[in-house]
Image (cartoon, rainbow, N blue to C red; front, side, top):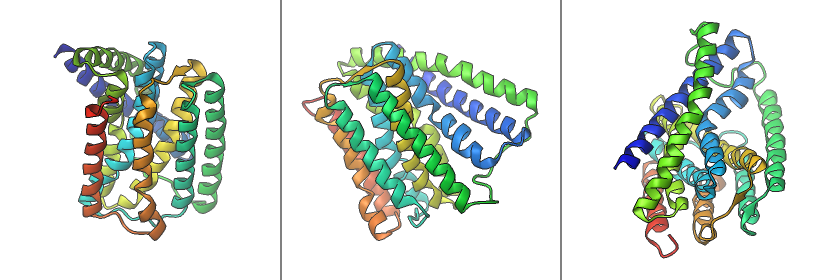
Length: 314
């Protein structure tokens, strides 16, 4: 029970630290007159994925590759089935935004690339550098497309720019300091919990840790739906999955090579690919994701997680 309490506490601290980091950095960037477009593509994107990055790095350094990779794979599954499914229960998610098909195709491509890289049982320094190179191309492509399509318009609505520069600096530094501490709690307690329950680190990484580190995206999706902006949710989920594979695993593997657990290729990566393929009919036919589809996605997520835990490969 102590390990579970520490894990939950670490996840809560992780979310609070990420929120403080984002608010501080966004407010500071606004005060320094950095364009909102640049903020959205850099600071906010990094901030919402900071939990995944820090957890994967800490797990890599601790030699727990199952958590490092399982965290990203589990987060990607949650981003599609939960981050899209749950908001769709509140308000229909539209799929007619510009560039969605292109980014979805890119997400499928990098998902397949990750599976191919894991095939030999490791993510090497070279693999990490290749992922980072592709991330830079993705970043430049998104920056150019957004600048062309939205010239003269704000990319996102900054919720709070009332922070003074000193307070914003304190927020940013505080978030950066708290993130590694929280990640230590998450990784250490997740390993202990896995041992106590007789589960592999990969299972813990793909379930508890992955959902915990996906909470910022889930919260953003639910709030977008609540405020009537559910059309942005799909693009955010797809972009987050690309970011997780190319940047999170790219940085982690570049710094510390990861060994892929032997059971990982039996189920987890295929569950991630299956979750991604669910979007094909919606994007291909431009069908809105309504409540029925949302229920299906949430139930499918539960089924995939049950399969990861209960099947013989767990």
